[in-house]
Image 1 (cartoon, rainbow, N blue to C red):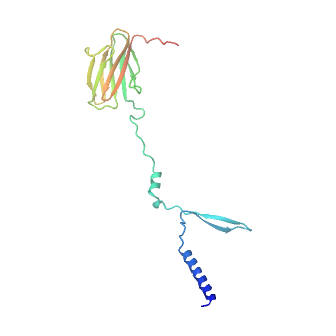
Image 2: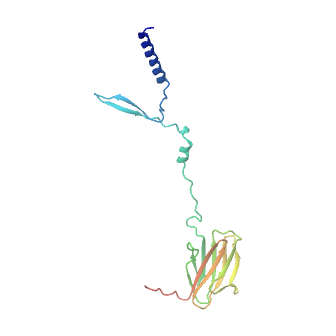
Length: 199
């Protein structure tokens, strides 16, 4: 075999090797990157057009997309807005004074006369009918027939009714009311309101 045939066979083998490598090369992922093609424009211009993969149908969306699109669950707040945890009604001189506690469970101060006897009703909106309520006169005064403490139960309306008797001494008279884990304090002030100190 002469040298010319040897060069021809070597060239043929090289061409076949390049063709096999070209055919077996890894194909790029068309879904990951948009394809770009050239389109002629009017005149001598050429524009590059990017073909982006279309979005999958609604029924073929991933579970992650469905979860991210779902609205967050709403948080329930108790007690609801506008419904206080307790309401106290104090009757005196033919009038009823209604009040609500603050976040610490303290009702606003109620002014009464010395030796006054005032009927009180308290509704515990978070309590249950039949639940025990413990009353305590912390700064003097008494309930009913002279008791310093009294145990009662909520009625079907989640309410307790009692009578508080104040002494003749002026000053603060606090009534503590425990219902389950919550405590409410109803303060009475006997005598004239204390003067406001200006600073």
